[in-house]
Image (cartoon, rainbow, N blue to C red):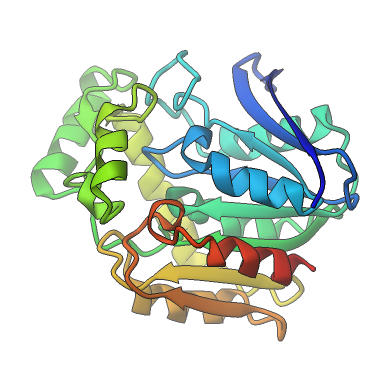
Length: 277
């Protein structure tokens, strides 16, 4: 196992937005980078332990907080366009001079970006890892929430006044300790803007229309007790969009949505390391 260093860097994106990016750098790296993307409420600070394990295995880990979330305080909970997230990824990779051997690790909500990134056929992209991806969710905004979004788009499209439609921390984890962590975490996102939810719906539509990407091997990890995503529907989707013969699906029993909190043996991280080779 390699000794690692950790630091945080601010990367200014294409429009000047300052992105907080955690970096986990192995002393003796294997020349490969894992670019991590987090969920709608979470941020890079939820995943410190797994990031360290990956770095000790020789991977450089880049983990930016999504614009408007985590330690990024500007335009809190807002997203003017889903395309900005793609441009943010490209800008961070440019900042760290990543010409090749990059794998994307997309967690939960950010899994919606996975088929779009794979379809771009980036020369630097090696493999995709989807961890409980939110491509086909069970938890969705209700009729009243959609109505509030529509009204908000007409009145205050960039005001973070709408709650994230996840009932509580027990949907993320069965651990009382980590439920308390989520409840008390100042960087966890609680509310979003109307246009954030509008862009989420746009991503959902694009995901449904995604064509197969046969050239990108992908690993998908699911939590058996997940109440946030539809596992069966997600398996069907994954099998259609990522038909590479090297693609793999693994499921973890006794786990809610966030494997970081419920798979404390970190078997899922060892599976990621084995898959990435």
